[in-house]
Image 1 (cartoon, helix red, strand yellow):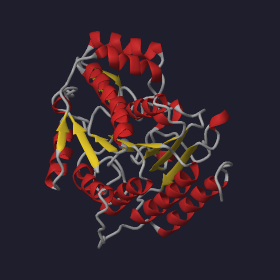
Image 2 (cartoon, rainbow, N blue to C red; image 1 turned 180 degrees about the horizontal axis):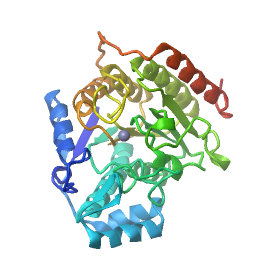
Image 3 (spheres, rainbow, N blue to C red; image 1 turned 90 degrees about the horizontal axis):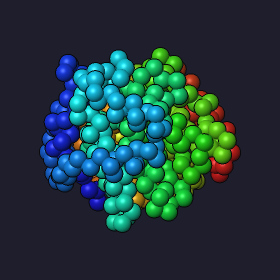
Image 4 (cartoon, helix red, strand yellow; image 1 turned 120 degrees about the horizontal axis):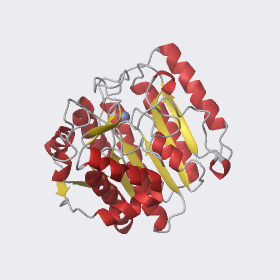
Length: 346
Ligand SMILES: [Zn+2]
């Protein structure tokens, strides 16, 4: 079973004053897609409870950054950076999203079930102090929702949390926040950042100190197809099973979908179905948070993902393929990195 949660606030608040891919229309698109395949959405009432949200934010972000966001409210509308707009109700909505993410982990633990929260603004690029791991911008993100869900699980007594980020851009904020911890295994499948936002999170970045071996970056080459993504999901299953996590947080970005708009990757329904299937197979208390996804991914990606989660088997007529030399090279790199993970049973 999967419980799907959203709020009408995500469809009206934090609205850009110019054309921008991250806008309230995204939630209407993804909700339509979800309802079309027969799922109900549980609507959360928007509550302007800044204190709760701020308490959670302080567990994730440095005080200086939170103060900066509060001050920025007086200068709206403005941009935090060339990617990330900020309007008068941006902070309110980001705090509400953070709160929902935190609460979702409480519900997931109680019901031992899966929660999918369709929210915005996305969060996975937001690091402790905003920009993370040398990225040039915050990539539409204000506060880190995946970190809130993860910290919530830890506070409830879980000692091993797996985070899986399948957004086509690396979740560099999440990676930075947990980079030195071994109670959070962070696995991130993303387009090679050599020439792609956020230009950080390479395979050799494997965590630090106690966290060494607990950050895993699996790189998709340019024009990556379903074939390599499906291989990576097999690798993720092996790593996750070996880690034996007690709970799972998924950053569900749907922007790797063929033609979604921001990426040259060519993933289709087969890839997103495999993510859903893996979540079902792991059978853990799980919180899934929407990250990116701007057009086709929101429609067709989420549909296939839900089929996977519900155990509906689908034979995909069409799976996209990766240019053959790139497939070999990038699979080789991934396997080299896996060999370097000290704690992994091989
Ligand atoms: Zn993205």
